[in-house]
Length: 340
Image 1 (cartoon, rainbow, N blue to C red):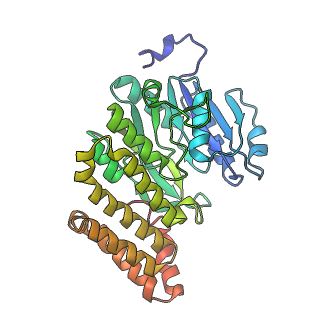
Image 2 (image 1 turned 135 degrees about the vertical axis):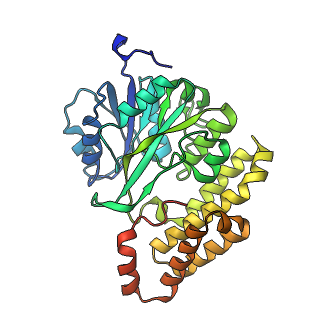
Image 3 (image 1 turned 90 degrees about the vertical axis):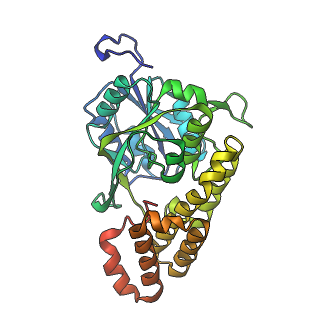
């Protein structure tokens, strides 16, 4: 917990540590850094973790001279490992995560500091996100998550945190979930580095189920979340495998909870991946994934008939209509598939 009055802080440590892993994002990293330096709340450090890429990303990062920027270099460990390195190097009372292809609006840090300062029981503060394309243009899709009375079931079924650039986490909560790296003596972990995907949801569920951490969101679309074709999310089978492995690892913590909610969570995940397959133009795969989703929990069609119907129609269109027509229909909705 940090001091109740921001004007009375005399310690040299910043209030917020921003942790930003960087790996081969030369087209976007400058925008990410600029969005941090433009924050209305200025008592932060920006920890850039060089995760061993081979493009000009770090050259761009090192061109900045702001004293609040610190650069940590490591051999490639993936997103979870880079976040862990950044958290280990951080000094702030709060830790904010930012993926280096995303952007923040200028008020983001200020709003989260106010939120957490006013609500000492909240461990993870997050916001909604606007979706942008690779060029930074807004899409007709946004993440508007549930903000209050967030239960572990909400996290499992809908993941209200939404993406890796949305959360600001209290240091005391991170202290509770820290564990020793199983193979690298002396290294501490917060995110599980055995995951190259689904490391976020594994972390949030571990915080909620094992450590009773409280999640609460704030109003506003404070993140520009970039949708880039060909990224990790395009590798659908691997994404599902990582998600399922995370669920299996958490099942021992709350078997009754998982028995009750996992079939529906699996259905939401499969429907999300079906929408991803639509976005990637694979109609047969999209139909197969949606069929598995409905077999896992037919209730999703009743709970969210419009989204399920849209997914079905999109899969059928990609399966049977000519590519030129599909491209025209899909162009304004490039973000399809981000929301489950």
